[in-house]
Amino acid sequence: MPTARALSTAVLLSTATLLASLLTACAPAGRDGDRQGHGDTGGTTTDAQALSRLREQSPAWRDCPAPAPVQGGGEAPGALPDGTRWQCATLRTPLDWNDPSGAAMDLALIRARTSGDPDDRIGSLLFNFGGPGGSGVATLPGLAPDYEKLRTRYDLVSFDPRGVGNSHGVRCPDAGLPDEDEIDDTPDDGPEETDALVRFNRETAAACAKSSGDVLPHVGTTQAARDMDLLRQVLGDDRLHYFGVSYGTELGGFYAHLFPERVGRAVFDGVVDPTHDLMEEALAQAGGFQLAFEHFAAWCARQGCALGDGTEDIVDLVVGLEAALDDTPLTTDGGSLDGDALVDAVSGALYRQDYWPALRVALEAAADDNGEALQDLAEALGQHGTDGGPADADADGRESNEEDAFRAITCDDSSERYSVADVRARLADFVEASPIFGPALAWGTLSCDGWPVPGAARHPEVGAPGAPPVLLVGNTGDPATPYEGAARMAERLGKGVGVELTYEGEGHGAYDSGNACVRNTVDAYLLHGTLPEPGTTCEAEPLPEGK
Image 1 (tube, rainbow, N blue to C red):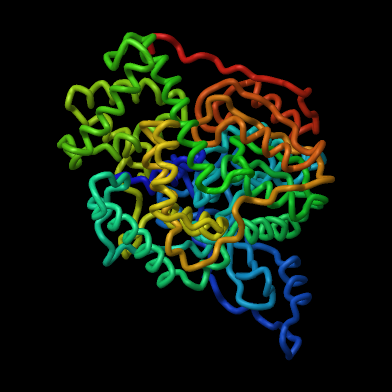
Image 2: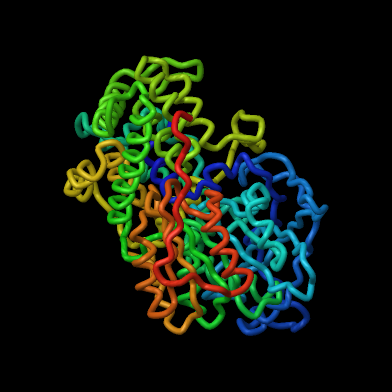
């Protein structure tokens, strides 16, 4: 059953990451956590020697087999239209960048070589599609058609960040934990429910520590940004050319802060607000999802849908339906549909405007006591394999580690540890921001309670004075990374660094919406270094009426 924890994960994922398990992927990386060899020195390797060897490594690129279950499963990526084959490799990196001569780990990589004239090649373009916790190795091949024009001058490259997928993926085994179906993620019926949610989070944290204690202290975004700079050097680029989506914009901001002089042409799409702590971010997302749902509701009303005559009517109906399903779930062929599943399906459908017609049909059916379509929608937008069934599992029955990695990276990055009292003190604000999504997002801030690793900071540090321009694409209807985040990222990056492009549209992010104006503007910068004029705005094509 989808939960507040699942919703908290989903609201930071790009559309690409939501569908990552439906896409093709690459092969497992090598073993992680091995000690780095000392070579022929006959003595202890110094940090300087270790770093030198890391920079001089040559990844062994090879054809990509099918993805591992931990990456989401599926089939091996097929060749691109021009016959180019996807290549996979591993990058050796320190487990702890503060101890580069100590233990090491392998990061999973994927690339497609440029299709253009070698003389026109700019370098590699590194992608991170969001999360945190999404496998870039699994995601990039399925989205490659969107980036084919960029491949005329770049090698397209992505990776599983540390703690994700085949890069020493974090695992939090649920054996011995309470069944998630028995946990109320918006406890409102007494202290027993609240105590059960707190206990679940703490026991999950303990399970993570027991299974992945060696890597948990080292999966934060700062260390991932240092991995990216090592990858830049190994790929032979003087500067890092980068395309970050959703959480990928935060990772890009960390990189720019650490290495402002090494930033190349960079695009941040679906920009995370770097001024927010976890509670503030969750509250902003509640408002973002509510706004996106109201846009859907207004469209639905114009279609004459059976949910209501106007936006307010439809919002009230869904709030009431969620409460009713919490009390009495609808029986379906796949089990049952409760209020948490409804919220999960609706939030997932708001990531792309072309999901709206399916959401309309599913909600109309649920309002008529038929939960099949809504449950199917929730499952289609969750972690599922290419055949439409559950995602592939390994011999131990384990699937993608995306949610475990989300928790681990988020809690390593944030120093905030919220209590039940903290949530209750802000719960009214969340309900006011969104009666549909607010409660789940509020209670989801407890997910770092009991985490065994101290978090790094209250909010990310992205200041990068002196860095070259970074193109920031903000979407006015974005549910997961509200539009205001782009302006605040621009301010924090520093004067003259952040250049804003506004997309007046719906869904999470802008480039993958297919909007020609956005794509042409982004492509002009990445391919030719041409930035948009200040105040440039791209308008979305409206969803056809009656569809």
